[in-house]
Length: 447
Ligand SMILES: *Cc1c(COP(=O)(O)O)cnc(C)c1O
Image (cartoon, rainbow, N blue to C red):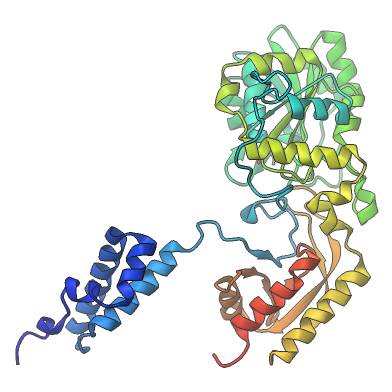
């Protein structure tokens, strides 16, 4: 008996397999060589465990499979059947507008052919839509808050209620953001109750502003009290102190029409006298990732001049998407914003769609059914409230859900009581056929 490893094919013999030429054209020769080496390493370990040596063809096939996995889209598009409409892990609000533009007149004046103002088209639309004097845009809302603090409150005090010192996902903790912006946090009130007096007592020469923070992902219930914005504005004015509102999700439409509790819109907060309102572009606004600051000239101008702004400037796709989203609101056609198209789907339509998909899946041999469900807005918008929805259900558990996630396109559902639940609230009607096909391919037929 010789050394069993001697039967292992050499790298050059695997590379000579006919299919490898195509792989080299697709992935480059360095990547193919590396994949072959890794496949041979695996084979070596198996031989050591007593398995027979693979043929060059078998090693080539293994390398090919590894190359295909590596070449898969870095951020595959998925079908969101979770029932969470603003799903942070799936990119929050569904993408507005067309695909990524190539060149566009970003800082270019088509009239004169000279340099244009990069943010001009978006800020013009923002001020018109929100009815405020000025606005600016940065990469996201956390950045907007840091910039606001750096521009107005560096080395000074900012007053915040203890009932609003939030932590949201992805390591956004309000006290830490304050520090990052160079401001000193002055906490007032108690967790459950803060009164106007609490604010009044701490305002002094070192006070740069009062910050109101949307609680986002939690609610306070029971023996609670908070100060209304008009009272805070009046207090601020009497001391010459601005009031800023970090509104987070930034409500724009009356949520009551979807059976949710009302929230003040950004427009209403500005009308009530907030000096600046900050909100995310990709939560309830339904646009791309961005942080928007809207308010008075006095509040916004220092942000425009601050050196940090250059470091936080949004990219062209975000600006184009924001402008397109604002155009929907300005034309009073919010249902053209993809997010609101999802929310507008009625109970009857969702049930019909669920039945249609379930029918197709039964045709493919799956024991699919339908169920009335509750979906959520998500994204830290309305944490304790749900929306009615309908889902397709398939018997199964974690294993079936995993197969769906690995399918093409990946389908992300949830598992509940021995069933995979595919909620249609965050699925667009034109995706129904694709959803049925992906589920049938992943779970149907012999496995
Ligand atoms: C979501 C949220 C943020 C952070 O917004 P990003 O756009 O994710 O940076 C900040 N403040 C509040 C109140 C939020 O809800």
